[in-house]
Image (cartoon, rainbow, N blue to C red):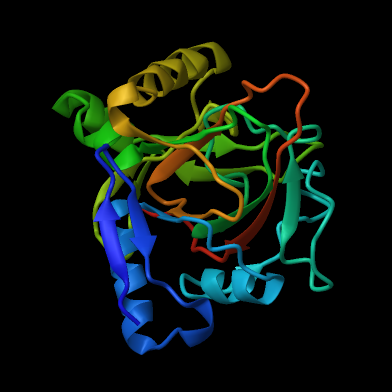
Amino acid sequence: MQIRVEPLSASLGARVEGLAVDALDDASLGVLQEALDLHQVLFFPELDPTPAQHKALASVFGEPERHGDPKEDQREAYYADDEKLISIIDSKRNPANFWHTDATFREAPPGASCLAVKVLPERGGDTLWLDTYRAFEELAAPVQELARQLRAIHGYPGRTATNSHPVVRTHPRTGRQALWVNRGWTTGLEGIPHKQAQSLLNFFFDAMEQPEYTCRWSWSLGDVAIWDNRCTMHYALLDFGDAYREIHRVIVAGEKPFLS
């Protein structure tokens, strides 16, 4: 199997060709993990995996785990498999048209997400990803130091779990540091009054959400994307009116975020 990895002409992301999911071996697993660590999000055009193949591909990057939980976000309560590892996310119930990182309200948020497109509108519906390494690295040094001293609250009481995580996170494999807050799930800062916390968070959000830090993918049916939640955010564009988009997603287990 000859896997070809072609970087996108953007801040992050790469296109992967030549993958045979049913023939994954140690060499291909290494290529894929190295590619994800380098490019943060990988795209597999028209791979169109079966449910078993979808879970097998996700397993390259960690142990698949169920997204839904009574204490977590209840908008994703439908599944495409009996194990309830493939969640069905559609534009009617959960359009995801905001910058976010998946399930950061968990104590140990997902390490990676593996998405397969099943239904697309005739036009529109692209998704953006954002490089949170670069968002941190391009902050002024005094602001970086401030960020390293802060912990953020993620989640909404009564709707999701809530947990505190460092505002700057160290990746366990690459050792790089990323700015790890997001407009979707980060709701406060530990030990800081609400009004001050919101001002600081809005500063971080505005600093992060720059077009220069992004890549954009225009979907075709059957496309698969895999991204590292430790160093990215994403945004599903809702620019197709009342049309319908459906994706199937497997998340894999991550670790409790840390700063070293």
